Length: 318
Picture 1 (spheres, rainbow, N blue to C red):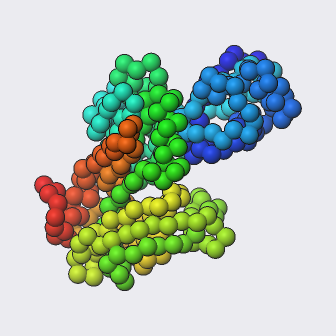
Picture 2: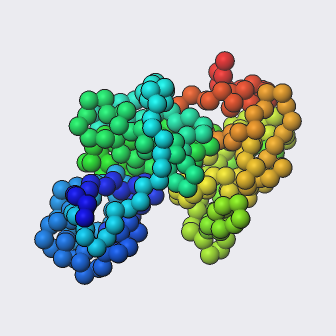
């Protein structure tokens, strides 16, 4: 029998019912036993008594008492966090106040662990406490291959507020992408449902009438003839790989996105990297008293090189 555990709700578990969360993490725990633990206050969320039907928010803390009949959730192996990783992470901080902080997530760093992933941001968050008694909490995600602004909550209350703001679509996210080809219109709205399909090379998202509703607004900022374009992408919904799948549906795959664009996602050029050219440029989140916090991240080196190569104007990439 293990002692009391305090587990944090992951970003991809937001909106999951509490009883479903326990089913996922402690499958041996019966629903009747869980109800008894809730009635007696042994299971709590952010220190408060709750019901099994509670919809969870990313970053919330769940108190799990000793469970004789349920083994603790298995933890994937993760390598120790190096001093170099922590220095790089702290240097990537774009903004910090008492409630939130924002980092410039680099290309190649996964936000959370998973199969075969032993280096990820979630394992490094203690290095971003900056004197706070609480560990920062994830409230949204970026793909491992996407760079740019990532918001973190510095305590449980901020996590609940930010998660609610994301759910109400009060957070405005703007992505920049270099895509291969030219969209048929300079400005538009992509409405195409997306579903996950398993495959031999891993899960893949695809357009499907049976999928979850997905909407992306876009506009062309600049072009290199009809060879490539610089797009501003505004996701109205937040499905996995939504922007990448929608760009393919538009006929203009994101440069470097071999997973969804295949060979069509690559162009020849001495300055063109084969990595994904998708960047979370900015995010705007509501703050108390009606204020807005807007944070932007600079282009990573491979995207800046592509901008120079195509001669995109309107931004300093030197």
